[in-house]
Image 1 (tube, one colour):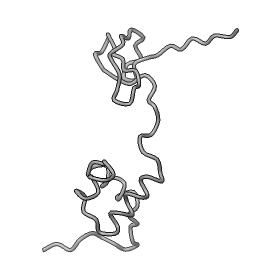
Image 2: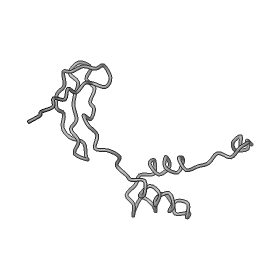
Image 3: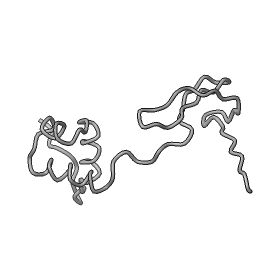
Length: 101
């Protein structure tokens, strides 16, 4: 039988002196670095939302649904929505921003 030993390190300073520090809302183990005091997730569970779900939410926004109206059925905060919409925006050539004044 094979066994593998995984040594976790602090992502900030690389320290190996870690202490378990609860779990995230999604169930991933959190750790506390005893050298620098940073708290971090040992192995994240992966992306929270899939690409198909993001596309549905952005499509609802493009259909002129309000951000508050999107929050209710989809359960997405407005910050995440704005990030996803920003990823879909295409910058037009020669566009210099909104007119001032």
